[in-house]
Image (cartoon, rainbow, N blue to C red; front, side, top):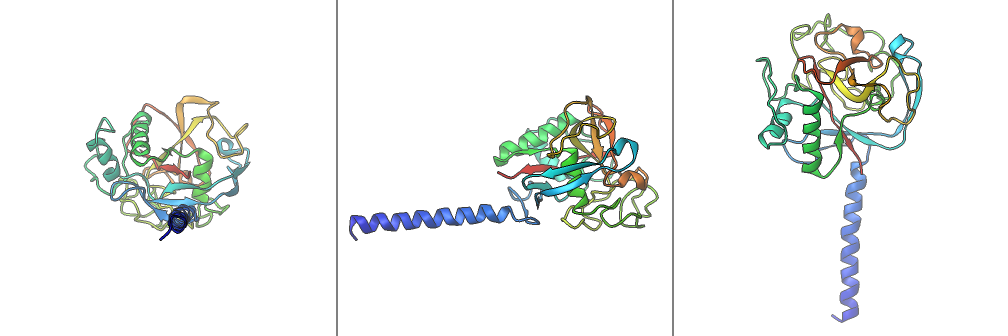
Length: 269
């Protein structure tokens, strides 16, 4: 084979490799795609599409309603981060302290009793481990993903359905007692589990008393009380209204509790 033919063959080979790599990258961007950045200990992620929605409600702390545009897709944890996943960070030395599980069990139960600093240790470890950016979602990203294209109080409608969510008075075996293993209940239309109930999920935003002046591009607010952070979703201990998509409340970022956990967001490069 002549030098010219060898060069042409090499170019064809390189083009094929590039094409396969590009196809693989494009495949990850498909909304609804489920993937992991590493086997076993990395959280399962779902690709959330770009789009627009109206954040909030007419409730005082949830108003005014804000038109938000999410300009690019991102990936979100299918489940609240679990003890298995967080304990792997502790075992690897990336997280300083193993959280207490209150003897409810570890494994596939959502991790709780972690402070913002400890959550950030986990996110930093995951980012370094995978080479991708892991962070907390903003309040807008969280609500957009939780609603999954719906405009009702919950993704399944305006009325709480008994047995479908782990919250107080929601008629499950865990209601007002403890968290349930992740994936116990049905996912929302975009494949996310437990966006209503189970654990309150901390997001990246500093606390503000309402949505006045909120960004419209999905970014987190940093103009509020940053000693307190917004949390979303409600919990096993909270009543059904606290599980609504628009519901929001505050918590001291230094305080760890058995009603608080988190869900990861993984940026798509």
